[in-house]
Amino acid sequence: MDFVIVELEGQRYGLRADAVREVVRAGTITHLPNAPAAVEGVINVRGALVAVLDLRGRFGLAERPLDPSEYFVLARAGDRDVALRVDGAIGLVAVESAAVDRAEPILRRSRYIAGVVKIDGGLVLIHDLESFLSEAEAATVDEALAAHAVAGAVA
Image 1 (cartoon, rainbow, N blue to C red):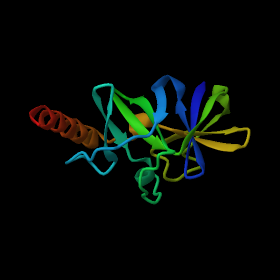
Image 2 (image 1 turned 60 degrees about the horizontal axis):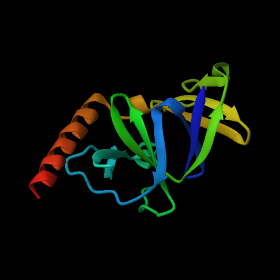
Image 3 (image 1 turned 90 degrees about the horizontal axis):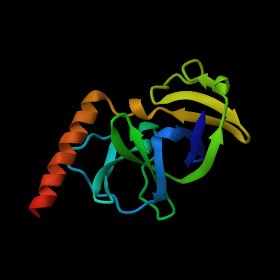
Image 4 (image 1 turned 90 degrees about the vertical axis):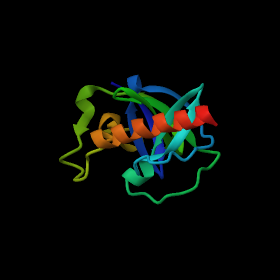
């Protein structure tokens, strides 16, 4: 299995490489009215509106302003494109499937973590993008994006 390793507040997370499209420098995030708390806002990626998911909020980390040294990981979460705001991208790592441990026995609040793997330098939490947004949150994001696109077309 291949994982893109990213860092957020000193913790390393793995994202399935087949879900990651690219890693780009962070830029301005536009507030998205009526979006759920799990969404920081929206960015424009080559003409398409992409929701920025709030990893810090989901993992109980302190909120902080966007820093120019941060990155967006553009990825697929189920049937939608999303952006994840991270401190840095470390690289691509290949691991054997058997080396990935299930998260439940290790982490009590593991809803967004699919597994844990040990690599050189320590543990990496494997992030489950497909479970990040609940069905209700995903529907709310779709509505907010549609309303934002209409408002932008009118302006």
